[in-house]
Length: 177
Image 1 (cartoon, rainbow, N blue to C red):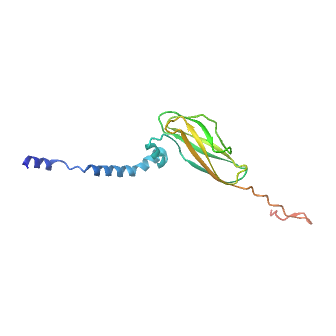
Image 2: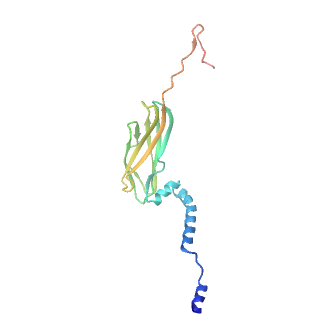
Image 3: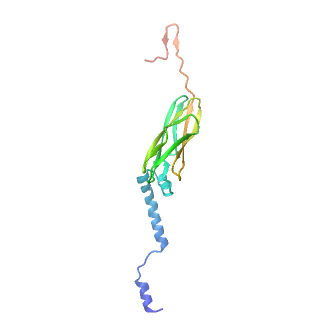
């Protein structure tokens, strides 16, 4: 080996191997990704969808209306986010049963904005656990359908407590005022 090549090897700056740089970049990106997602999209899952190329999505895919008595009408809201650079139209909403009613469609969502849609749940004739869904249809070819799930529990209406009246005196024993 000649002296010139030995001197050149010693004068080169030492750079980490490609795998060290890659590991450091991945570690830094992994630490910053949650912050970036929360700032830009409000959630990590929406940030992941964005990185995968999904530009139109439901902010929350499932909602519960809680526990209600049969015959009660409840309402839940679903927000559709448009993270694309063009306007998207929600063409229609198709419920899984006739007990669900939705807003009127079509509805346009401007680029980089979102819209909230109301779904009413009619609980007449229902009892026990309820699991239904609404499919939103869009004009966005990559995300043609968005499926929202609705859950809750419907209990039988409680019977009114019969009044206990002392017939001899006409006194209501349940009146504690």
